[in-house]
Length: 261
Image (cartoon, rainbow, N blue to C red; front, top):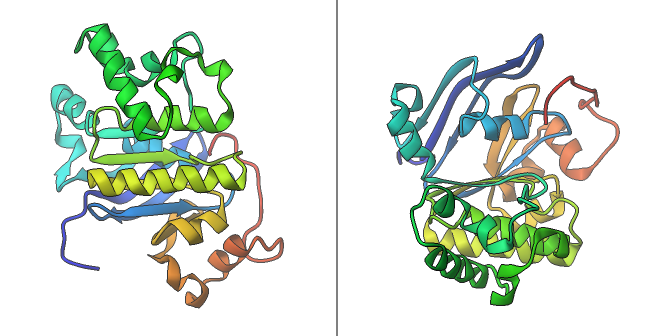
């Protein structure tokens, strides 16, 4: 690891839901401009971690730094400005069914009155083009779009304000191999064009190997392995080996949790 200051530093993060301990002293550094895949078995807390980073879930212990500044030290106004630097793609896209595509993409600009509707629509169309979609898609509603198109709209929304940090929650879940490749290539290209730091949850081990240069594995509330994707097969980590190769037998035992992701 270089001496570069992390874009995001997670230090001993603890998150509980009642008696259910989801994150147990988790630590992870995200380096600037890097595209990191976060993997782990079902119900291991990957989505919970993303929501803790952006403050949707308050943490119960530890600390989060962004560019060396402790998030806990920020007042409400400073925290709001910090969130403006994040672009988030939620699981299953989370588009607003009652709004046309362009309003989904430009939702923030429209709701806070930052731009006229005409200007916001034009800006949304530019983002649609950036993710490979036609301008006429702007006036359609999410229900009329395929799953792959919805993912691209959600990605366009995530990059609308040119964030320098992207948090992506399983951006290719449920897509066929062709669309998976398209979406991952879009993410890589957009990250390269903008210089954004990307943390992407993925359950697609083939895509992880192909499309990400670095990976971190979450298990039992902690990061148990982090490194270059090319080093996975030589890692000597039984948990990692079982997960990436999809083996039913191994140290990972599937279990249900009351509330986790």
